[in-house]
Length: 146
Image 1 (cartoon, rainbow, N blue to C red):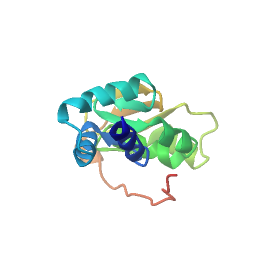
Image 2: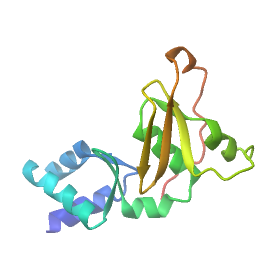
Image 3: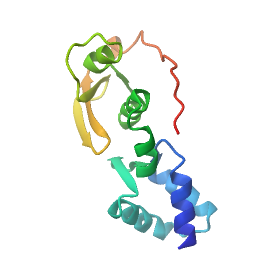
């Protein structure tokens, strides 16, 4: 039980994590590989972690501390579907150029169009040609997560 608590404490410090991350951390704590899926299932059941998509998670504690940060929402949008970058109405609203409230973060990607409705928000990905997926840059904001 102590190992399970230690595992969860280590996950709480991460802005997101995969099942592979859980496996590596559990090995450091001396847990068996077979118990990793059980721990992930229990963490989900007791709402200690949130599923972003299959195999990708964030701890509820970390999300609650950062959910009002636009930069964290944009970060999650870029993590959920790769390669992608935030675009369209979400970007316009971020720079106060949209006059209406936007409830979904829209990104563009070279992959197929897809939407994700998660407990962390709604993320929409629009497909564009590979030739158009260029000439963008990473704007470094205060990406300090608590």
